Image 1 (spheres, rainbow, N blue to C red):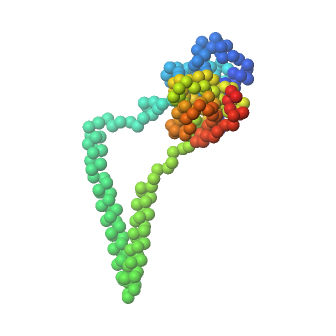
Image 2: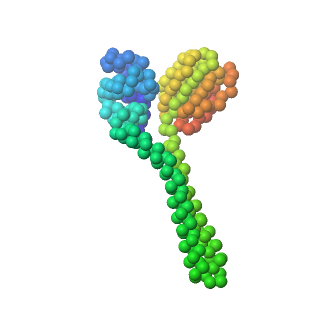
Image 3: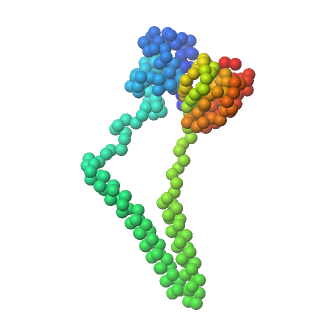
Length: 258
């Protein structure tokens, strides 16, 4: 699995022992935007065009493959361009009339065809059973009819099969909404640098493949990838560890900033 964009930038900068202010001076990109790219908070940047330009400049300053990082950003974060959307008909009026005609006729005609085929198959099987079974023709006809009905059901089930399940998420989108001002510390795994430490009074969002959070109190609404995380409201601190599709509690001595 390729390394995340933000982790690649942060590790390259720390490996070269370069402070964020040095990069800010060298690239003329504000420090808050540099941190946003390291934290993969691309929604804090002023648009997709600026995000790609900033990412390319930052990667070049660190001696990284800027083309690869920009392509990874496009595949993960950039919305579909207009050219990627399905083409529209050159005659909207005719297309709408045609779609309406199909909506009215297609389901009923399809049902009639399926029913006619089923009846024809059953009739042929019954006739064959009567001609070949003699005295036991009734029994053979019933068996053939049952087989034909089973075949029809299988075809209908295959045609109406449920769509495949969506792919499991590869990263965590963590949103914290405090009821009162709350101390928060966030990192991206044990032993990693602190991504955020401070008191928040409004909603904040973090993104990454692995996120750990230390809360000063539990008067906070938490969602991970849009799903509510149950939490008993109260004044006691809590630590939580999030990976795509899972979360668990962190013991007091192992929490971020502890």
